[in-house]
Structures are given as C-alpha cells and as structure tokens.
Image 1 (cartoon, rainbow, N blue to C red):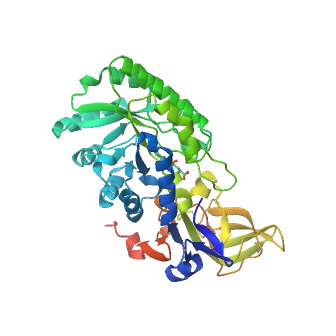
Image 2: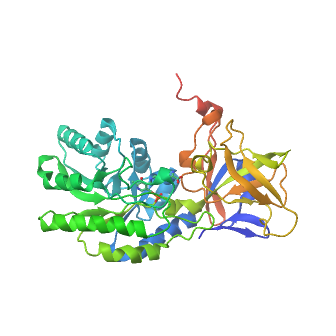
Image 3: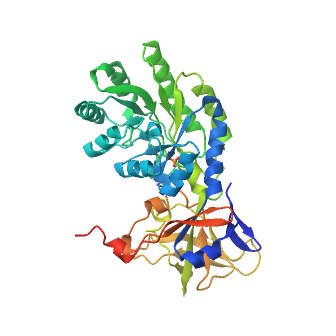
Length: 416
Ligand code: LLP
C-alpha cells in the first residue's frame, strides 16, 4: 500500500502533483510520502503490539535525516551499520538507548564512538570483534551491552546478494561458537552479553525461512535459560519483502501471527529492524526523457536518471515499475511501444527498466520509477561525476525539500 495514485490522469504523491514537483525541483528527483512511511511503521507496531517491541528502523534503507526524524518522533529506534549512520542517527534526535549496531567490520574508531554515545547494543558478528569491543570498553572504563548475531544457517529465498543467514555468508556467528561465548561470558569483563540477533536476508516474501531461523534461536535461548543464562534482548532483524510487481509478500499481521507464538515462549524483549518494509513503497524516483532512440529491433528512452541515482536494476536486476507521470499507464489497449529505459552512464548495465510498454514516449516526458524509497538514494553515488539527486518529502498538500541537488563543487569538496 502506498500513497502514489493517479488523479485526473496525473500521478500524485498524497495531494501533490509529481509533475509539478519535477518542474519545480528538476530531475532526477526522489519524492517521498510521509504518510506511507508512517503507515508502514504503524502496521508493524500494531501487529506486534502484544510484545511491545523496539522497532529499530534500518537506517541503510533510507538515511535522510528528515526521514529518520519522522520515524524517531513516532518512537522508532534505529539499526545502524557504521559510524556515519550513528552520526546521522544522533543528528536525527534518536535516543542512543534505542540504537543497535550491526556490521562485520566495525573499526576501532567506530566502536569507540558508539560506546561513548551510549548505544543500546552492538550486534556482534565474530569472536574477534567481541574481544575488540571488550578491550575498547575497558580502555574507556565503560561497560557495554552486546547481542550475539547468530548465523542460523537457513536459506532465504531472495537474490543471492542479499541473503545473510546461510553459513556461506559472512554474517553472524555459528550457533556452537555463540553457545560457547554465552557459557564463557564472564571472561569478557567489560561486556554484558545480554542479547541475540538474527537477520537472514532482505526482500523475503514468505514467512517460512523466518520461522525456521527464529525456531532455532528460540531453542538456543531456551537451552541457555536452562543453564541459568538469561537473554534479555531477542532481535529478529528485518527482511520483510514488499510488492515491486507481482510479489505476494506476507503482511505485517501474517508475519506477526506466524512468529508471535514462538516469541511469546521467551522472557526477552523483542527488537525488529525493518528497512524496506517501511521505506520501499514510500518513495519514487522521477526521471525526464532526454531522447528517444529507435535502433533496429530496439527502442531506447534515454533519461536523465541513471544507475548512480538508483543502482538496484543494475546491481540485482531488480524490477521497478516505471509509470508515466502525466498520463495513465498502458493498460492493454491502443498502439503501444516497448522501450528500454536507460540512463546516460557509460555502462551497458545502466538501465532502469527493459522492454517496458508505453503508449508512446516523447522528449520531456516525466517517468516515475516506483518503489524507490528503500536502497535508492542511500545507495546513490557520484559515478561519472554525476551530482546526487534532490529529495522531497510530501505531507498532505505540502512538499518540503529535504536534500538539495548536489552541485559540481560538492563533487570535489573532499579533494585536496
Ligand atoms: N538489519 C540488518 C542487520 C541488515 O543488514 C539489514 C539489511 C536490515 C536489518 C534491513 O533489511 P530490510 O528490512 O530492509 O530487508 N541493497 C539491497 C538490500 C540490502 C539489505 C542489507 N541489510 C537491495 O537494494 O535490495
């Protein structure tokens, strides 16, 4: 569900015409619906109300401070993976007591920054990292709570680049090592090893792999309990899939219904780390057609928006629906043409969509690349020395600039 709809043949975000925004701010342009972000956040909140979880929105999905702040104000915590994300989280006014920090490669400097900021938990991904956090905490004369990220060795049916819970993946600690860590927890004098963490992958549309992983971890925690070790935090990660085209993902209610019976067997506080579920369908990327090129056997619509603005099609061959901004989309009647929607970057992998049907495209048309709210701007780069796009947040009939377009000077700002 989202708030991007046609009104009188024009695509709107809430009550604002996207065509008008594109003319005002230029393209490439990310347009977000505040209402969609909050609706999705509330869906999870409602579904899990009975266990009162901390919902730590995954900053990597969409890291714009205005968006973090919107969620933080509603009570969200944040899931971070770097010092940079911690910096953003604090700028957005997040309570450090609701910040959890994963990543297989936290540097000494990042660990120190996070300990000094009093974050709630590190999600620890190796024994070596656990030793490092203990050592740094000792140096800082602090005691730090940590959770062990367990690699449950399950396969999540999703793109191979975004599965994280199989033993072939670099993430988390195998369950036997994790047990040894808990049994020997007193050796880590400056740590309070008080939680477990799971995250098995992203864009998972079916509850079964979640259930398998959570069952394993519940058994693990129960076993620790029988040995007198209490696990205070049980973090089930993110990973909920959304609709890009024909997917039928589990709803928040269905997901909760499937896993709450497992979670209710525990005495632990529950943490969730949704990213895409909250942000994915809350944003679109607007592009402008620069040229139409009719080549033998192929039509190209060359747009001003490229893989540096949205890398998902290039990197994962991800499908994003592409809709005309100023007319209803093709619905099977009339004369249609197929186009590859491609950007100006010098790579054949630079495309936003292939063989997409339109009644006809012309120079100057605006196109909306749908479901671009998650892993869109946050993965944008300056490749080909292209300034990163503008971001606008819509609330009802108001639109607010939240990130201005980068300038050429921004491109060379860090160069000495
Ligand atoms: N927690 C941890 C520890 C994670 O690594 C991630 C995402 C999340 C939570 C949030 O997952 P979500 O709810 O968004 O599925 N760039 C890829 C997705 C990479 C996901 C990485 N980890 C894409 O565009 O599909």
